[in-house]
Picture 1 (cartoon, protein in one colour):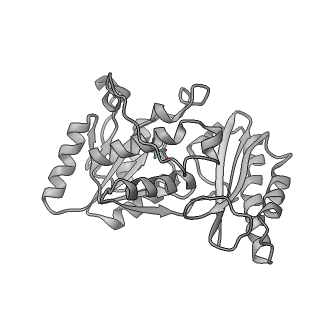
Picture 2: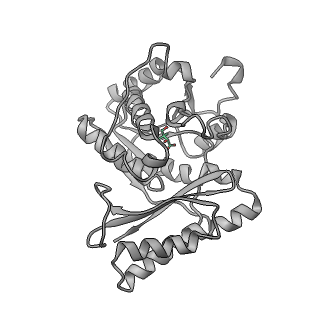
Picture 3: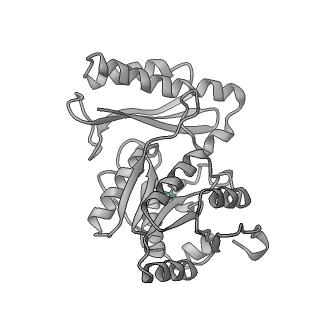
Length: 291
Ligand code: PAF
């Protein structure tokens, strides 16, 4: 964040651009014996993020938000350059949601020259988005690990829409003995069922109308399970049948164990059915739990 790019900061919100300044704030809060909740984001905040922030407020005395479009989780052909950025609007959302501290570093602050350490969660990062976005989850695990060290939260809140990401972060926190509680929040949806996403703003009205097929397909799979169908191949092929014709490309439809994300042949335990599709030039993901 260059000084000229800093918009007015709402009252009650502290804005930090360097890891040292952010860590000093957290250190002071913790020294007073207060708890810190943290919501990491890439900005372009919408009601889904606001729900995460409200949840954060319930868990701690102070609430920190990070806004950083992390370049290392985008492959060269992906949408890093066009990813929406609007710090001014994000700060207004943050203030309205009761955020105390916003950490909005630039790339050089997070990845200074010579940076070369990464974090890799081997099994969970394979399959699903890991297959179609090679390197994505190493980028996510690395930046979230760094953010956790900088912000030092007691609790961090993530959306279940990014189900694989949430499972990966839970695993990383366990494996690296990080004393942080991870809370997952159910996906926030529009009234027609489409999961809220910063990328929805790229959809034309015609594409937005087609995108409703995604929740329709997933909800239909959940209904089929409720009426007794437990065969993963059948449920997956029904989701695919609803999606074909509505979306332009299907990256995957997968049915997996909710905890370790291993593929399931039968739904005989808590599972998740997850999809990634392309509509026009926009890639969307969604999932529902199959209990
Ligand atoms: O979910 C996101 O917005 C990002 O993947 C995250 C967790 C902020 C890491 O860059």
